[in-house]
Length: 122
Image (cartoon, rainbow, N blue to C red):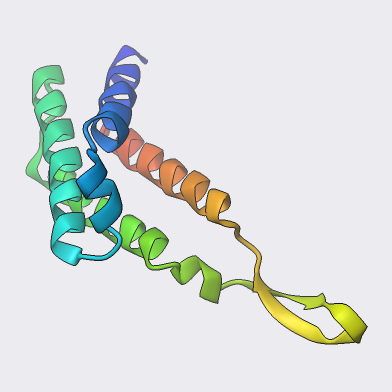
């Protein structure tokens, strides 16, 4: 349990506290900046895994690829394309709106990252 707490703490620090304004602004506009953000997160967790005696190269690769895919999905607003719900607007006109809000996408993103960290305990 203590190893999970250490990894979660490191994950949150690496994902938020070490992310400067430049990275926050441009990771959603530039894939290279997004990749650098994901490298900082996954390699930082790799160092924590090494310290805890849990290091394996596949874990760092899984963290890097998973973080990149999930943040790409979140940054590009792909959650807005699926799933959609039908909403009746003014005058009974039906429109399609995303079921997941912008805040909802952050929750999904963080749950996915927590699952990734949990997989590192295997």
